[in-house]
Every structure is written in structure tokens, then in C-alpha cells.
Length: 472
Image (cartoon, helix red, strand yellow):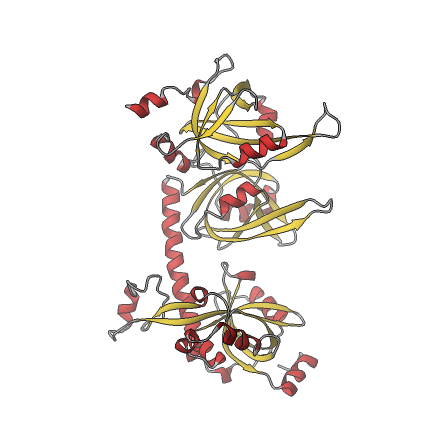
């Protein structure tokens, strides 16, 4: 009863109009933009700052709000809440929106009005857990646009440049959230970007770029293969450098994670199935090195040749095998143990997430009735470089032990100084490296490179292939 009485003190968004006296609103924040500064026309040489957000209190009612003012006030207000928070807005100015101007840069809303937050007259507060109306939380999972009005990734790829610069809705699963990268523009402004890889039933990898801090922070909360997005009003562009379409997050964009619609439920199940299948293939590929006859691998490539040949192969499913004479430019033997020692099933060699539960995959029991246990396994990252480029590689399991001349148990007993010494026995030294390369959208550069063998190169032999790359 107390909560109902508390909620009755607020005006519903659908009931807002400019003649209301000192309205108060409660809702959940579903979208938010970065703070931006603009020259103040009334005070030459100074700036005014602004940011906008979108608030929702029912499936059919959401409205845009914006605030202008001093830098300290605007930045403090923006930092006080984030997307997903329940907020109370007291005494905003309710204005009739100019549809053409308002929705050019802001999310499309069903409301006829917009809210203006004033430093002098308005207050925005984040609701406590006790004050939050539980009925607001499910609104985060209801698309703001017609749930049937979206493009699949296949639609976007098929339509190609005819959709260039269009603002559309997309339904897709998250495959990978990339690292946040900083850059400086030509006019010395600092910026950041984050590339998110999306996928669905027909397209394995589709790039979506986040340029603003708010969407970048939001992207960090998405779990690959466990998050499906209904992305409302994203811009799609043809990227001539990639020779493909990409999506770009803009100020109009609103993300609905794991939307409560049948299409998204089905796609989430598909994403989870893909995750299990890919993990099994990954584990199988890493352990397949034991059964590969290295004598059958004759072709020698440069790093760039490997990237070009793997990417342009007619049959994307067939791996590329080859030899590379290269320097080791990175080997993370001195990283945290949790990052370089993983647990495998002794029978199927599949990675086990929780060693206490053991391997619980049905196919493992179908392989054999031999006893099984959870075993620690080395899983190292290695970069190999030559004069043409760098490849990120996986050095795992028995191949890792053979390369380092160190068992897993022995690795556990190494001191930090010994690990550092071991690392520098390899880094910047030239090796003869046998590799297996497969296409993998979740891997860096789209290639998964497994090391099959890594031995110190004979200088004369290596020089022959470096000077005469045609000798293969």
C-alpha cells in the first residue's frame, strides 16, 4: 500500500501537458547521450553544456528530457545516473516538441511533449531500491519501436549500399565486445570508440561502432552469446575500407537488451547453441595438434600471406596449414595464472567452466566409457611477427608444454623471476612455427591460429625462405 501511495504522487508520462503545475515523474532511464559543450551566444567566449536522456514509465509511454547549464552542473547531473536507473524528476518544464527538430537527433517517442530540466527549478533523483517501482524494471526489455519492424543482418547485407546512411532497427545477438580504443582528432579533441560484433542466423559477424561514452559503457555490460539486442534507430553505412556495411550508434539509438519478444527468445537460444558448438570446435582444434603429421605440412608463408589466403579461401570451413619463420613478439607466460591455466576434461578435452561440476556434455559420454577427470591445461597467447605483419596465436595443451619444456605442474612451481626468464628465452627470437588457421569471427582479425609446433629456427634455413619467399 505504501508503494502505491508513493507512486500516486507522480504524474504518468502519458498525462503530461504544458499546463501542469510542478509535475513530478517517476520512470526508468532507457537512453542517454554524452555531455556536450556549445558556444554561449549571450556570453562571448564562454560555453553552455547539455545532455539528453529518455525516460519511460509504461510500455507505451516514454519521453525525451534535456538539460542545459553550467559545465559543473550538467556533468554532475549526468554522472548521477545511468541507463537502467529508476529516477524521479521534480518540476520539469513540459514543452510541446517540434517534431522535425526534436526527432532529428533524439529518439522517436510517442509523447507530444519533451521535458526541460532546469538547474534552478528542477530536481533529478535516483530512486532507492525501496522506492523503485518493480513494474518499471521489465520496461528495459520492451522495444521502443514496433517489435516486428526490424532488419535482420542478412537483410542489411543483401540490400547493401541501398541502405547507406539510413536509420533502421536491428535485431541481433552480441558475438564480441571489443576493447575500448582512444584516439585524437585532427583538431586535438580526445575520443574513444568500441566495436561490437553482432551475429544472427545468417551472418556470422557484423560490426557496430560505438563512438560516445554512454553507449561504450552500456556495451561493456553485454555478455557475448548471452545478449540479444533490439537496437532502435541505428545508422547503417557502407564502409569502403571494409567493403561492407556497418552500423553506427547515434544520439537517436536506444538499446533493448534481451527483449521480451518471441524472435529474440529464439535468437538467444541459437546464440547459446553456437557458443557451445564453437567452444567444442575450439577445444577440438587446440588438441588436434597431437594427431597432425607435421611432415605433411610443406608450404612456407609470410604472416601477410597467411592472412590473405585464409580470408580469400573458397571453402571457409577448411583450415589452412603452413610454416612461418617468425619472431615471437608476445608470450604471456608471466600473466595471471587464471588467464593462462584452464581446466579440460581428460576424455573429450573440452574446456570445463566449473571444475567442481566436471564435464557435463552429453557427447563426452558418447565418445567413450573411460573414466574422466578435470585436468589443468596451459592456454597461452602468443604473437608471431615477421616483416609483413603480426598474427595472434593460441599455444595450448600438450603443444604448449612441449614448446616451453615445462609441464603444467612444473609451471605452477615457477617463481615470477623464472617465468620472466622463460619468457625472454622466446621473445624476439626467430622460430620455425607450424600453424593451423581457421576463420573465427570472435578472434582478432577474424582468424584463429593454433600453434602445432614451435622450434627454434635454423638460421641458414630461415634465411633461405626470407630472401627467396617463393621457395615453398
